[in-house]
Image (cartoon, rainbow, N blue to C red; front, side):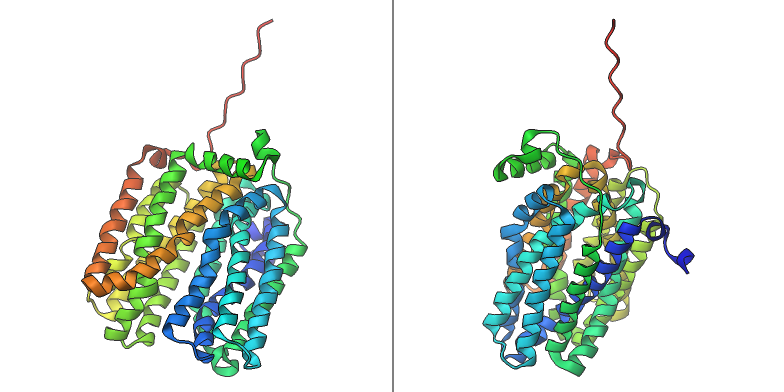
Amino acid sequence: MKRLLPAVLRDEPQFARLFAGQSLSVLGDRVSMVAVPFAVLAVGGSASDVGLVAAAGLGPMLLFTLVGGVWADRFPRHRIMLLADLIRFFAQGLIAALLLTDAATVVHLAALMAVLGTADAFFQPASTGLTPLVVAPHRLREANALRGFVHSSGLVLGPVVAGGLVALAGPGGALALDALTFAASAAFLLRLRPRNAPPGGTPTDAGGTFLGELRAGWQHVRSRTWVWSGMAAMGVYHVVVLPSVFVLGPVLATEEWGGATGWAVIVAAFGIGSVIGDVCAYRLRSARPMAVAAAALAVASCQAAIIGSGGSLVLIAALEAVTGVAVSLFFVLWETSLQTHVPEHALSRVSSYDHLLSSGLMPLGLLLAGPVSQSFGTRPVLYAMTAIGVPAALALLLVPAVRRLPAVPTPTPAPLPAPH
């Protein structure tokens, strides 16, 4: 049976523990994404209240992700993740209990989602920085591909599980399951024994003030052209392109594709494509991974125009599956490149800037997409999203540091011995 497991799970027992816990947690997250809006509606909330609760969960990323990055480079990363999981277990468990006892209000849900979002802001940078401490360097791409596979599979399985749980036990029952997955993840993290990150090369990195360490993290970003240009392109993707999926796609589905059922077909097709992309990333051997990633991001940025193309539901679903392949390729290669080329002692801080410029800024695009589409029309805005997103990705491909970044860092030659 063990031989059926991917090599990285067989050969890296610490990563296998991390992977098992995170797989359960990701499934719970996908269930929560479906259950939370129904929870808001179940307590008498409006569509605006659904947006308010969603923003309450995303807002802390803007406020705390840089703090989380500094802490994750200063303290043991798996302990920060463990504490975040325990906080999320209690917060989500309290939401579930309030719903199951008919005591929940929109205010309760928004406040507790803010607690969950704050824990996420500390968890995510620590998670990115932890992977290289439980996996051999030559296994990083395989490990990230497997992590991506779980996230992509959750896009397909999560809504199915959530739909059944909401129907059988209501939103409270579904969110109770999510709370239990945080407890399971915490149990695996408690048994994790990662190696220690090497200390930083400067006093600021090693143990300076908070602001000093934050500046040192930014210096690691600024000094690597491929990092800051990649973050800029990914920021455009999150702020400009992704609102087509989270805001305008469901609106168009309601008008033209039979509502939630038609949209579910498109989302499931994208999820299947993402799974295929993760399998491709697992097997991919590329001497220039960021060049491949930039090309994949250009394909991924076509999502908005595909959704607004006016094609049949089957055609749109098929094309969205292609963009799903591209999205998975980009994120696996991007994370692996960061983990390979950024010093481990600074990785979580660099990752926190990554999360700030992508997920942290995404609410801005989500808030603007609706009003802009009402002013200019849904389809013109969808076309404009791709018209902005694709050139931004292609511009990334034109950056020499991106095209030339090797899969493995070039070893620094040893200094010649001093003459006697």
